[in-house]
Length: 306
Ligand code: NCD
Image (cartoon, rainbow, N blue to C red; front, side, top):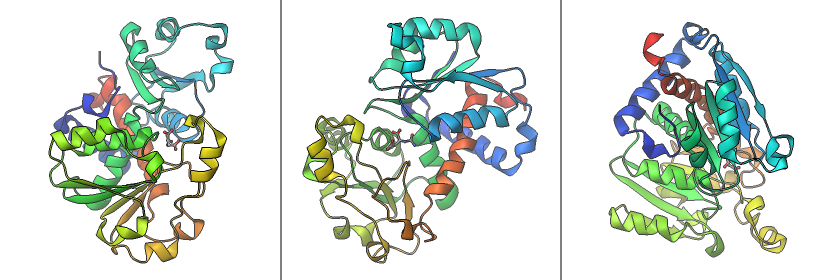
C-alpha cells in the first residue's frame, strides 16, 4: 500500500506517468466518470481549507466515487482527545482512501503508519503540501511543456509557507533550475532548505525587493503571509502587505512569465493582475482537480484499468 507524504515519494518517472494520466483525464473526463464507482474518499481536515478539501472531493465525485469526512477538528473526535492513529484506524473501516490536513507537522505520517488505507498528506503545518506541489508541477508542465530550465522566483512567506517548501524539494530534481527567494528578512526560507540547495549545488539568490529580479523570472510563485503561524499579531500586521504584485511591477516581467499562487490570495496580488494572460492561478486550481483524480486512481491501483 502506498501513501503520499512528500512529493519525493514519487520518482520523476512516476510523476511523469501521473501527469500524463492527468492530461488524459483533462482531454476525456467522461472516460473516467465511473472509474471509482463504489469507492469512498475520507477527507479528514483538522485545519481550515477551501480549495484542497473541495478539490479532493470534486476529484472523487468526478471519478464516480463518494466522499465523507470532517472539515475542522472541533467537529471530530479530536475535540474529545482522540489521537490521529486511532482516528485513521476507524476511518480505514469506512473508506478506501483518506486525505488528511493537520496543523501539526508529521501528523499524516503518524496516521499512515497505522492506516489500513492509502493516506494523502493534504498539508501538515508549515512542513509539506505535496498535492499542491503536484498541482503546481502539472500547471507548469502543461503551460510551459517542460519542467526544467527555469529561473523561478518564490515570493512572500518563505518561512512558514509549506507550499514553497514542497515545491523547492520537488523542482530540484529537474535540470537547470535556479531559485530567487524574495522575502523580508523575517520570512526567509528556512536554513535547512538553503543548506540542502548548497549541498546539491542548486543555484539560488535571496533578495528583498520583487522589482530587483522581475525581468529575470520565467515563473513567479506568489504566496500569502501565513497569519495562523505567527506568534504575534503585530509582526503579522507589519509584514502582511510587504508585497503587492500590481500591473506596474508586472510590466517589467517577461512576456511569457507565469504567475502562480496556491491561493487563497489576500493582498499580495492586486485583482487588476487577474486578467493578464500571465496570471494562471485560477487555471492552477483546475489542474489541481485533474492531478488529484490521477493520484486517487494511482494510489488505489486502478489507473491501468480505465
Ligand atoms: C495553501 C496551504 O494550505 O498551504 N493553500 C492551498 O492548499 N491551496 C496556501 C495557503 O494557505 O496560503
